[in-house]
Image (cartoon, rainbow, N blue to C red; front, top):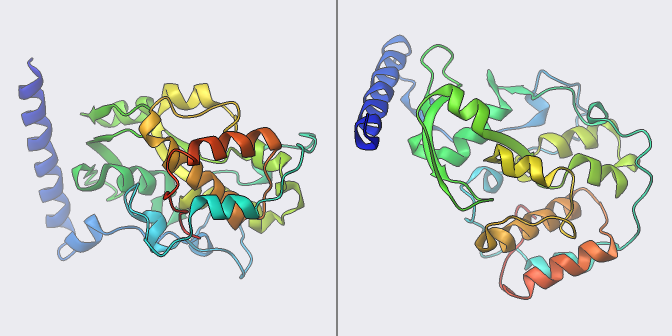
Length: 259
């Protein structure tokens, strides 16, 4: 079957899925396409204190759409403390969270995928949450990826913590409360839906050891890392600081995100 024929079939199936969903849920079209107001306080996965940090609208808008009033990423970088890594002893993902939270009935994973795929995302009529097909420009590789079915998304996409949790643990997160670590792990500011193989290659590297192969995304990537570290009072190593600064020197007008 030719590519064009596959694309036509995928679009047709998507339209049928949407129609069935709307028949079963009249008046829900706005909710079907709405940008998620993700807030850890409403999650059923973990107990979170009342002072939890909720996601702002800017953190759920498409990548690259930062506000002009946001401070420059270089200015935020100057505010980060430079220190060596702390011990990794005691690190475990469960120190941050045990599973993706469910917010407004949908998994945060699905909300992040929907954010990246935008209007191309086709949602399952069975639960009104699961993204079953769509396409987008993947940020880490720069490739345009098309997903014709749910299994393609399951195997091809992972949700990356822009500031890896292991890196965060060694650069200040040990001193955060359980609630603050939970917020860090589930904050949309720190989450991107990316190519699975490329994300595995990143592992828990910081900017000194790993940058996206897609050079055109590196400025936005390190600006987001700086923003996350500033928001959660994490520090950077000297090598990490220098690597981030080297990238930002090529884009001095790059702005922080959600700060």
